[in-house]
Image (cartoon, rainbow over all chains, first blue to last red; front, side, top):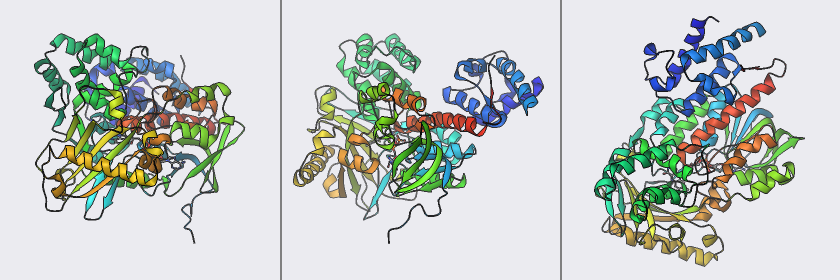
Length: 87
Length: 482
Ligand SMILES: Cc1cc2nc3c(=O)[nH]c(=O)nc-3n(C[C@H](O)[C@H](O)[C@H](O)COP(=O)(O)OP(=O)(O)OC[C@H]3O[C@@H](n4cnc5c(N)ncnc54)[C@H](O)[C@@H]3O)c2cc1C
């Protein structure tokens, strides 16, 4: 998956979790929480969706990697690439 | 011939969910949507657990636990149920207090609470803001040493009137007291203070009907009148359950039965490590409740007396007194026709916190008399707020801790699961027996409609993770690690 594809995949998940938020204006470097109203249950939903859509398991200790769009991409892109190679 | 409530059931499922409380139903719905085959088993004839209602002759519908829930429930309905359910949530307008220390009305949100604390109680704004910030910032991982009493003492030293204002509603919401960890107070108080108190338009009956339809639509096999008697293990793995004497296979069990029932009865102490059982034995149950249901005659109306009314004749807030069989404190919920569109009926439900021991050992005559006394003393108090209540109402019934035990099977008829320490047991269950999970009212913070439903989601996530590791045994799940 390219960086843009990973970004789009994350946006798709966020749009389902927070349908009232405007995803177009997301600044990749700032924390997601600053820009979208996300609580701890929403982060759990992101983890569940990643498992459902891409068969990726994010261990609890890595939850902090999901803090901004940039860190999500940086963290998920190599795993998504591995995933594709594996399957 | 006795009806076979399991007729047509499969011989095995991925997951069996034991109990259809809000945690069990929410978890079952999510797990089914995630692609697992799910059997939802409930011993009662209705789904919902404590989120329930009953109908009585004369067109009365009486709700058990629809006094109010926090704003967060809207999001929970939308994300894990349907938008339609989320859109049916409406806000309560008036929450009243009437006791020897103060009489007031509030919309029960942060802005109004701040005003009341400043104007009625003369607390300075900086202290109030800091209190709210402290309560809000508390989380699960916090230091447990501080009790709610110590927190109140720190912010509002000696102000028993303020303590009562802040504590009484929470004691009714989850049975917690001044001596429970401050974080249990902080989390629940902040949930409510977020945006006020809410209810479900259509009543509990409509809510549960909608949930049932959704479960069916998503492929959950629902079985009522079915008691799970035992969880079968093979070594340290879950192999199945015994329901009404019949064995059904499964690789994981999510128990929505009380945590102590789950360990001691459904599984059995011998399957756990002795250290674990030692800890389980330290777990204290939360208190139970009494309720009086009052159905207003058809055609009668009552003036608006607020939505929720916290009344007490006790001098000050006192945990022991709140639990005493000699009732001094009651919460009244007033249900107006607006709650059930199309209906013109009113009902009133009085709730008090209560101890199981006070009711369990009465003879049948004593029990009947005690119930009648509860009804009459409740009406005496209600007369002050709804004059001529005895003439306006034509249906009266009481529920006691024994009633709650009978319907939910919860030990001691507990209304809100266990004290804080129960949560650790619930969380550690799968570490003892892989594939065995618990969700539902536990540890104070996971109770109430919002707590139970969200905890259902949290545990469903773990069941999903576990099931995928089983299904992917041939093709291992990619674990993300940097
Ligand atoms: C009087 C009262 C008033 C309340 N008011 C409010 C309120 O206004 N707002 C709010 O948010 N919360 C309120 N609550 C709390 C709230 O109702 C509960 O915290 C919540 O509904 C509990 O959900 P749960 O998932 O833990 O399951 P429960 O409701 O406890 O349900 C568990 C289910 O499992 C079933 N079960 C147990 N064992 C078995 C078995 N072996 N086999 C088959 N089935 C089994 C039981 O029959 C039951 O249906 C109130 C509680 C009480 C008692």
